[in-house]
Length: 371
Image (cartoon, rainbow, N blue to C red):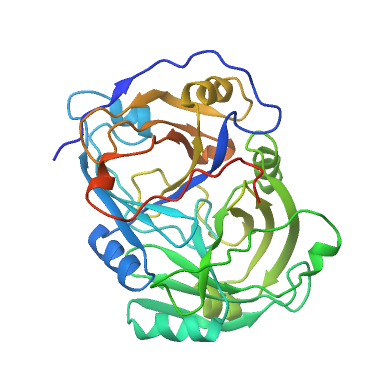
């Protein structure tokens, strides 16, 4: 099936919100470009307990520059897409692209543009044992405990999949030191997650590597409406870097945890590491990614973003009217500071995909501040 370019609708004037994208409800989905879409879907559904909602593709436009204008990829790029419900309050969109000059190796942990999904669990050892038994992940090192700083008491371990996604399992301490200093709180998913890893509670955070942490924090806590929970830093020696992160050589990491709406914590990190890649991957590269927001009014949000310092719209708002699984979806991509890829979208109730599965997308939340 070929998904043709959706109908273009120019943005209409709207009233700018003071501290967040107008009419935003919640982070709608995390998106990642993988090397093997079938393997990724199989892993997410059988190991992580995700529900497959729909698949699309090829998404391509061979007669125009629509792919470049709207998605920021090569005009002749082609994508297959799968959307999954991942736990109680998250959606995951997976892409597999073919594109000229595509990078097939995802960024390393310390490279600009790397990212990972953080699954929060009630029992780290039990969840890790089940993930390892699947035979579909490489476990990096062993569970570690933060001994000091704002997250002292948290336990974590990182996993690598063969198809291009890094996952962190994290067990949060009942109380964290940063909570004594601020009223801001990271998202603590409460579950249940039927069919997930034992004790899985939900997607607790998503991590992104950025080139300039101060610039990124200003953008995510300003126009994107986030709330800074804490900042922390650490130096990692070569042996620990290799064992726990799969990174060759020591590095220094600075991280800011930002609560982004009702169900999301974004962890932004900058790194000092010899030989790290500084060019951010584009959407069509393996390891490319974007973060999407559900809004009630895409045109109003797009108009506001076009006037917002640090934001750059890609093309104009689109309406999908092809009769497919997401007929009626209205969306537009934009870039944030440092080239960070983002999206605003609106999917009305009763999408066509709902006729073929009992599974449903998460959202929208009642309001951005609903916690």
